[in-house]
Amino acid sequence: MPIISRVLILGDGAAGTIMANKLRLLTDRKEVDITVIGNSPKHYFKPDGVHIPFKLKKYQNSIKPTRFLFNYGVNYVQDEVTGINVENRNVGTRSGKQFGYDYLIIATGNRFDPDEIPGYATEAHHFYDLQHSIELGNSLDKFQGGNIVIGPSSIPYQCPPAPYEFTFLLDQYLRSRGIRDKTNIHYMYPLNRVFTIENVSNFVEKLFEEKGIETHTLFNVESVNPDTKEVLSLEGESMKYDLLVLVPPHKGQKVITESGLAGKSGYIDVDRHKLNYGKFDDVFAIGDATNLPISKAGATAHFESEYLANRLAHDISGGIYDEIYNGEVACTTITGSGKAITLYFSYDRPPRASFQSKMDYLLKWTSADTYFSGMLRGVM
Ligand SMILES: Cc1cc2nc3c(=O)[nH]c(=O)nc-3n(C[C@H](O)[C@H](O)[C@H](O)COP(=O)(O)OP(=O)(O)OC[C@H]3O[C@@H](n4cnc5c(N)ncnc54)[C@H](O)[C@@H]3O)c2cc1C
Image (cartoon, rainbow, N blue to C red; front, side, top):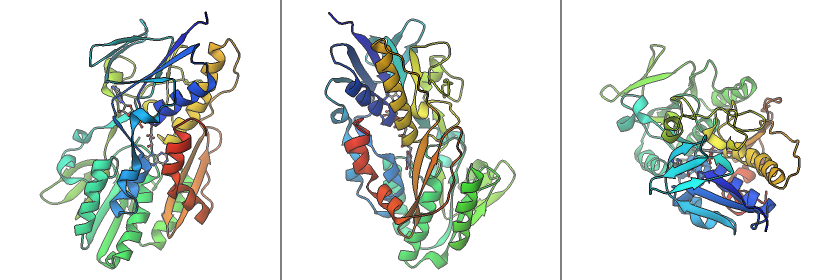
């Protein structure tokens, strides 16, 4: 009778789903039991959030029932994880169930914490979840000109290029409506440039200049004043807006902090090459849930899952896997006018922004199909 190893995955988003499906393809159902606990009945392809406000994509094509996205042989439990005890190898859920494991993979992503910024909840729009993307689209429909202020409210946030991608599409949208000359677009960023990495920042800033987008660096949002319609920074500056598009403050999940796996930020410290948590060689974190100094991106989750699924498959079968995860990420971002740019990077290789191409645009345009049919299924 073969020994069953129990792999428990927490989170049913990009990282949890890719991980479960990849591992299922690499292991025998009789030898490895794979269970995913997650609380999203629908799986939303978040990169479409930059297109939806401009009606460039139908949101109905960006969501699928989560249950049907797992490969045959993956057990999916819809529930909320309420406690994780790594000493006792036990996970508890809202419905009162308890789950043991031999390997635990935490892929609970992150959450938004709009209360961090006074005035945010009533004033700011964003495109970081489906509901808000649709609402932002409705506000844009009514917009007739004025000041639009865009930027991340704090770092880290999901998909670092998404705010500038949105800004390029906004510029294109306003031109197509004939109201670009009545609109000032202000792009603000918390650092002393418009993107974390210098050469990408230079590239983006040049495009911003060409398109007449104004930039405001070292702007760390402190609060929003609904009466004066101003966004205020920690540095003592302020900016007037008619439409405010602010990436919400992000944090790791509460259950992570409450279970003692992370501090207040909620992000889990893992080994940067092996992805295991602390001294535990049976506990891992992947995707946006980690504290790694790399992009919080679906592509990161994809590369991490590739590494971890192979490692666990070897580990469980008694083999040796001596590869490491090296911080690989790839990211394609639309820059307007039917073009996009792809950045590849890893811990040792910073990204280089060199050229925009129509091919990259096509890659991005079809990415929801590629994601649902291939990437999530673990075959890519
Ligand atoms: C606007 C936008 C554009 C983006 N564009 C790109 C892009 O072009 N390329 C790219 O690579 N990435 C992009 N991203 C980032 C990418 O979508 C995320 O990095 C990715 O979804 C992270 O995957 P994850 O599984 O770690 O987290 P998530 O996908 O957020 O999944 C976490 C899952 O865990 C579940 N969960 C959380 N807590 C619990 C709990 N207590 N119990 C049970 N379940 C729980 C959640 O319900 C969720 O389903 C974009 C994101 C946004 C918002």
